[in-house]
Image (cartoon, rainbow, N blue to C red; front, side, top):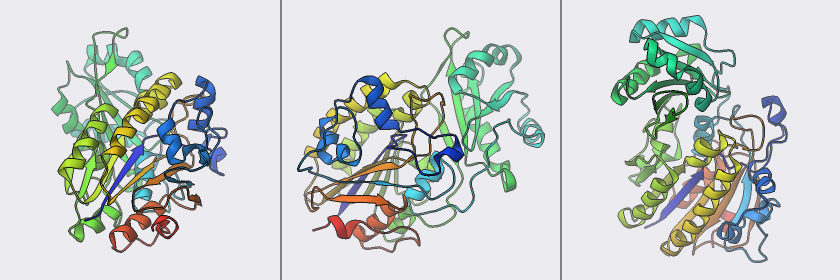
Length: 390
């Protein structure tokens, strides 16, 4: 009976990758820059696991005897979107990036969308989600046209007011879009972006966002475990990002609070296998909105919760904390950033205080989980289990 819990702190990068300048992300350093901006972080439990030993983060000391093992991982796949990051964490490395549209979508995409859905389009540009609904929300309500937009990532986003377009209708439109976006326009994610309000002064996005990802292009740790009858439990948007491939149980959550509650519940409900969770608020609410104070508060709330969670772990559990990309709230950009991600590992059966170094790929997570559960890994990644497993 083995159980591994992987918690992905969405967007919590830890320093620019060597090629960050190619992506316009030179200087991005999510956790370090955030800590400087807010005068330090009060996250002692993450500190005890070894977070402050990876990099100097203001307010987070490097313990002489961390209870966890620590390091950081580099992304090999081109890109910096959530799908690419999660797939690489799961063992898939992309050779080519997903298509992006910094100047908006080409005419053939918009025409096909209108043809298949019957709706007109406004927007069609790269934009901040909160800003574009302020800019175009009233026109959307007046004309009935849908707000379609993208970002620096490979995403096709549809924003609609829930008083005009019911949630199920918005989801239906996303499903239609997911089917025709293929070939050279095989965009990583189609995203439903519902919002509420009556005018630009009170428009706000609701928590009913939904992602429609491409299916993984090969095996991941999730599919391998499921094939070996080892349970895989996905919490948060994990199911969406892996298109439900290789997942035994799915627990949908819409916030960090819901995700953390689901994680605690999962310790009682699922006694073996892999539990993987994504805590989305770090990225969705604070990274994309350049809100360092919110990011700080979210980390500190998570840190308090983390102590409770660790106290509920069983003797045979392994806990891993990591991220899928950066999202530095202190830079002018409101998009993801090309960064290393932290890797923290804790468990009663593991060593402690081991510096796992700089891992060459996010796929080292998958290789390590494969060794832990005694299943085959994908062709990518090198396990760090020999360093930390007693």
